[in-house]
Length: 259
Image (cartoon, rainbow, N blue to C red; front, side, top):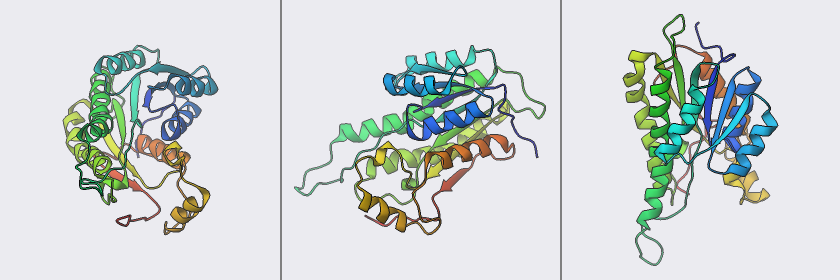
């Protein structure tokens, strides 16, 4: 089996100020990569970067801002090690029914914002990163880079109130294969992870009783996922050179009910 050795490469990780992105950055730095951490929350991003040490730098950027995305990618591409890895973890979510209990339609601007961050932002980072990776020298098997995007099991079993989130994450799933096909000619693989219920800051408002109930609904293991589970899967995807164009569920065999 051939696969990419992350040691001596540069990686860009969006949403790196917390949760999945912070765990992924830590795992990549631990494997010898240089990481460019991207987040719109400057305080959180700098805190993670400082904790991870000299091989991690922070660039403040909003994934919906094309100029800021281009600057972050340029920073990664201009480093001493070849830029070969991009991991999209930036994302947001809202809860809103299509028609609320008072019979009013959902706020369109909120729907647009979620889709813009989760789907358009993912595409913006991936396309900019791919253009930079395509300029690197190929490895022995012709590979130049790996892009890992983040969807959700809500892409498949969205719950009540998740129309915006599910639509955005379903779009990430749908773009995975055509993007992998687009980038095959330049040796860049594209894969997506669809996590289940992960204990990240997005669950910060959930009390202990609800956490226990959520964990009990997972067939096995009966626990919430943790960011390190995600980071280890990112690493496995990078290291498996034949894995391409695939969306991998990481959910303990959970299938979400309507509510």
